[in-house]
Amino acid sequence: MNLGFLPNPDPAQKHGWLERARKLTPKLRHRTLRPVCEVRMVADPASFQGWRVEPCAEAEAAPARVIEPGGAVVVDFGQHLVGRLRLRAGTDQGVAGAPLRLRFLFGEVPAEIAEANGPLEAGQCLSWNWRQEETVTLDVLPAELRLSRRYAFRYVKIEVVDRSPYARGARLSEIRCATENAVPLQLPPSPTGLPPDLQQIDAVSLRTLRDCMQTVFEDGPKRDRRLWLGDLRLQALASAGTYNQLPLVERCLCLFAGLARDDGTVMACLYEKPAPVAGADFILDYAMLFAPTLMDYLDAGGDLGLAREFWPLALRQLHRPLTCVDEHGRFQVDATCWNFIDWHDSLDRQVSMHGVLLYCLARTVALGERLGCRAELAGLHACRDRLTTAARAAFLDPADGLLRSGPARQVSWASHAWGALGGILTTAEAAAAFRRLPAVPEALRPAGPYLYHYVLEAMFGCGLDAEAVALLRYYWGGMVRDGADTFWEVYDPAQPKLSPYNNYLINSYCHAWSCTPAYFFRRYAKAFA
Ligand code: RAM
Image (cartoon, rainbow, N blue to C red; front, side, top):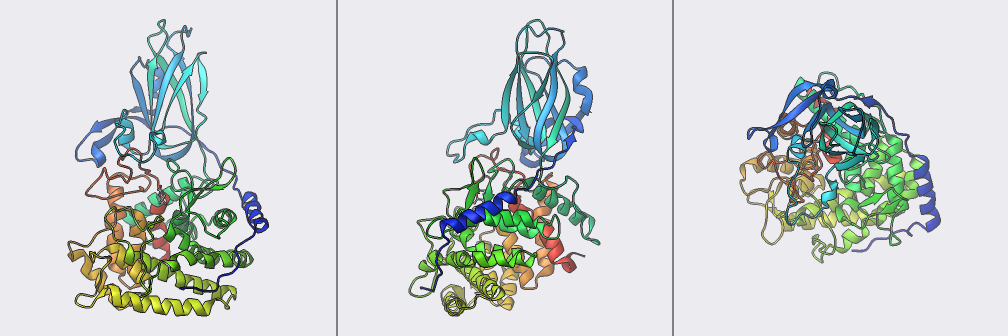
C-alpha cells in the first residue's frame, strides 16, 4: 500500500531540532531531605513479594549506635525520591587506623533491600548492574561522604563491611538525600471531589511522574533512565493539567525528530549523554505513535509552527507499517522488528497492531487537518476505509462479537483495546465486547500498566465509564494496597514476582507508563466524581 510521502528531514533541519532541544533543557531542582525513620524488612508471606517494612527507631538514632562489621542500618525516607546521598561517617574511636568500608543498597521496594544478595538468575536479559548498589572505602575519618551517582529509592541500607582493628565499628550520621527533579517535590492538587481512595492513587501517579521528570521524561529513574517514545506519550498526557511541562515534551519531541534515521524512522528510545544519540531499538507501534504524541502536544497548547516542521516525519512513520499490510488489507506482524503492545510472551499481536495502525492513521489525518496539510490526506482516508473493512471481515467473529487474532484465533484484551481505539469495532460493539471479556476465561489479560492504559482509554471511549473506574480501582488500587509509593513497571496481582527480565529485583518500581490515573482523573473527571 503506497501513499505520497514527503522528503525526509535533512541534516541541517535535524541539527536545528537538536539545538532547540538543548535550549529547552530544564534546570533541575534540589531539596535536602532526611530519612523519617529506621526500619527493618520482615519476611511476611502476606505482604507484597513476601516482605513487610517495620519501623524500628527514630530517624536520627544511628549516630548513637556503633555499627559493628557485618551490621547495617536501613533508613526509610518516607516516600520515593530521586537524588544523591550524603552522610557523615566515623568510627567509635578517634583514629581511623585502617580504612572504613561501607556498602550501600538502594531500594524502591522492600525486596530490593531484603534480598541483598539476590540471585543473578539464568536467562535474565538485562544487566545486573541496574541493581542500585555501591561500595565505598574511606581512608580519612571522620568523613563527609557524598555518593556521586544518582539513585531512585525510598529505602537505603548501609552496611559496615569492615573497620579498623582499633575500633569496634562505625558511627553514621546526618544521612541526607539531595533530590533531583525537573519539578518541585510538592505534588499538584487532586481534582476537587475525587474520593479519598482515588486521591491516594492520584498522589502515587503524580509522584511517579514527578520522579521520572528529569532532563527528559525518563521511563524509570532506576531503569532504563532514558527516553522511550511510548512512555513519553503517556507522560505527556499526564503532565498536561498537572505539572504542565510542555517545554519538556517539546524538548523530547525535538530529540526524537533530531535523531531520526536517514530513512525518516523515529527510533524507540534515546540517550542524552555524552551527546544525544538514538538507541538501537526500533518499535513499530512506538514509531506510529509519534503523530498522536504530536497531536496531544498541540492539544496541550504546543507550537503549531514546530508541528508543521515535523509533519513530513509524522507522516513517514506510517510508511513501514503500511508495508506490513498484505494484499487482503490485513496487518501481518513484522518479525524483523519489535511489535510491542504489552509485555506478554504469548500475546498474538496481529489485531492489536492492526488497531494501532488504524488509530495512528486517524490521528495523523486529524493532525494534517489541524496543520492545514491536506494534500496528503486523501490517500490516508482511503487507506483507513480499506483497513477497517478488511479487519472486520478477517478478525470480527459474528457469533460472539469478539475479535480474534492470528492463526490460533486468540482472544485478548489487547486486541479489543486497540480494535476499539482504531475503530475496527463501533462504539456499541466495543462496549458489548468489553462487557463480555471478563467472563471469557481464555481471553488474555494485559501483563502491564502500559496496555491497561489503552484498555481504559478504549473503555471510556465507548461509554463504559463505571467499568473503567472499577478497573482502575482494581489495578492501580491493587498496587497501592500492595504498598506502592510510586507505580510499577509491571504488575499482576496474581504474580507479585513477575518480571519481563526474569528477575524482579531489576524491575523498575517507579515507571512512567503507569502514571496515567492522573490523566484519567482529569480527562474523564465526571466519571470519578
Ligand atoms: C523497557 C522500558 C520502557 C519500555 C520499553 C519497551 O525497557 O521499561 O519503559 O517502553 O522497554
